Image (cartoon, rainbow, N blue to C red; front, side, top):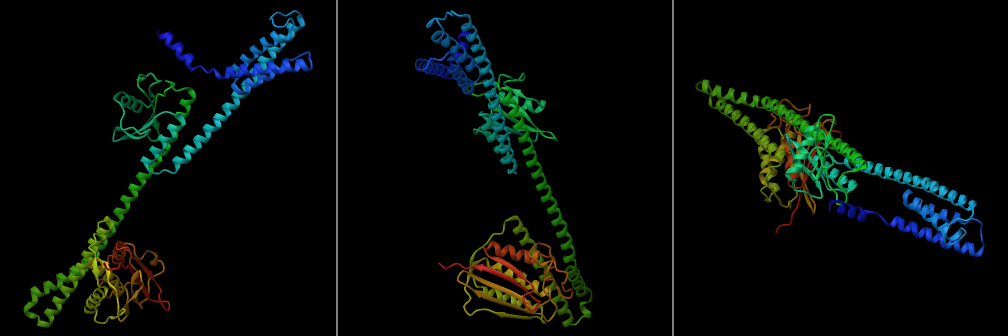
Length: 513
């Protein structure tokens, strides 16, 4: 019963069309030869049948050509060699000519079929090389591990015309990374075959000696460092095992896939290492900056408080008030530093929450100017605001902090007596605040990085209190706040006469509801 089913399967899978076309070609040669013989009798019509043999060889290969040779031999004998319409041969030279025709036809068919097979193999190799090139090109543009795995699974599925899965090692366990067509999971036997291929570093599954009864064939994904996973292909509908050409192609694709995935893993590791190094660098800079910039006001507060405690009875009221004013001033500076640190932490974490409401920028500017004049009695601070300064929807606390940081930056980086001017420009779409000073300006090497964290100018005036700007966070926070509101901030230096600095804050306008 099993042999009958095997025979029926082989019979149904046999390709009859080449032989049918070969028969038609010989029949066409027979008709053509008969017409030629009737119109102009020729001593040898066999060349017509050779054309049918060549047609079969070029079109369908060697076996179809041999079949056409034998069929042409019989047709030529039956219809054109005396006695006609029999397979008998009366003359010896006719027998010799018929044998020569058969030999020539078979040799010609073999050579033509070989040329066809070689041409087909060359075309197939060219297509394979093109597929490999396209495969490599597509994977080279994928940097993420998931994207590389998904792209590789799709290309292997297209190339081998079989369902494809890729499993990667995740902390000692093989997990499904990509599948084409999409698969959620594999059965237990297939997973066992995948683990066997991974641990043994050799193929497993159908077509191998290891768990050959499973529905998947797995091969390891090897890199120079280790085995990072496996790629598997399923049984196709028409064939069970992979032929040698498919095995070679799968091995090549698996090698390219392993290279692409290893590159993606290395890129991820480099990104992680770079991020960790940057985090460590920022942490070290922050600790160094905070420890340095906190030490000065804390020392001043401690000294003033100690003087008040130890020498209160010996100090008159003005001296005591002066010490208390110093404590208050330095505490305010520390408060600014702490608020800046908290703000930059929220900005870096993407957790800067805005409480938007209609904000009067004129009130914010006036409060900042009053506070700055109290701190710096020798400060020349001017404001030029339009009579009709529209309100903007923003977070009032954050906007005031951003603008205050810009003003404090101008104060702390310019010598005493410098003029600082705040003005505003109004357009239909935005309100622009500008803070301009006539100080020495920002050095050319600092200007492109002026809004980065921990960037400080070498021209900073040491005679003034930094007011929280010593950490180099003020302008970085201003940039984060303004951009969180959908606006923009820019720096220009020199702004006039080869000197001065201008910081421009742009807030978008919204129409009141």
